[in-house]
Amino acid sequence: DGVSEDKPAQKAGLQKGDVVIKLGDSTVTNMMSYMRALSVFDSGDSTKVTVKRDGKPLEVNLNF
Image (cartoon, rainbow, N blue to C red; front, top):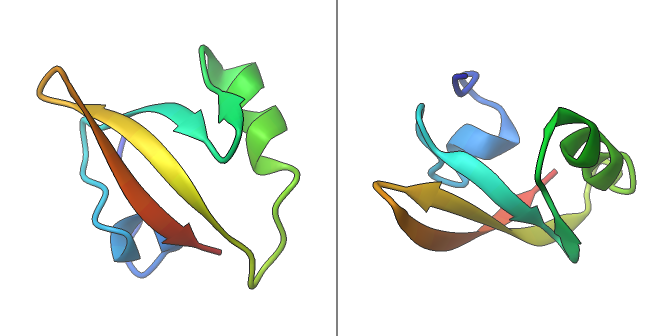
């Protein structure tokens, strides 16, 4: 839906319109799987996130 300013997603380079398809080791298919995947991380953790941008996958590092 969007990317909040000065939050981990923006700092990782994610943009409005990116669709998260994988967070860490978890595949994201809907809002519930996204929330479940997100719940295992704490402040200070880092992981890779894969998004679909313009129909192509893009992997970036994300620091919480």
